[in-house]
Image 1 (cartoon, one colour):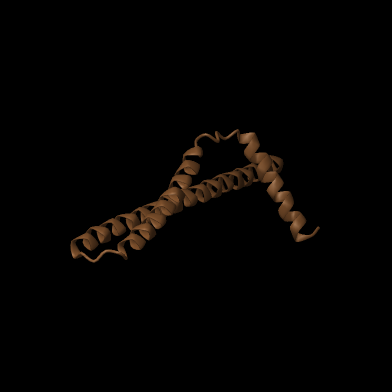
Image 2: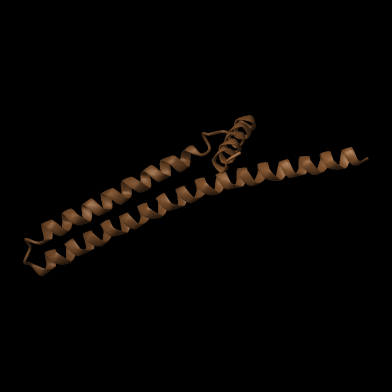
Amino acid sequence: MTMTTLAEDRREEFKKNIAELKLDKKQAGGDAATRIAGLVLMVVGVVGAFVVYISSLTLSDLRDLVSYQILTVVFLALTVVGAALFLAASVAKVLRLWLVRQLLEGQAQTDQISQALSTRN
């Protein structure tokens, strides 16, 4: 049995176990919405900062330049918030999958120990 076949078998078994658990996928839907919102905020922040920068190149009054700088900082902050939202939602998805895998492996170990103890007696 090759390594890829073993990995595929384990992956299929994991998918089957997840289907048997009947996990509610709507709970994780918030993560998808958060990732999309984070992506949108990042794009809006970067594009907005670029547009403000381009439009500030034609200004010569210092008071206008300060207001444009403030607006640029706001757009950059929006980009950072979007990146944080995207990263948090992505990490939550990975950790949720890892936790389910750990629980399934723990349950399999418990079943194996229980079976070994029952056959011993």
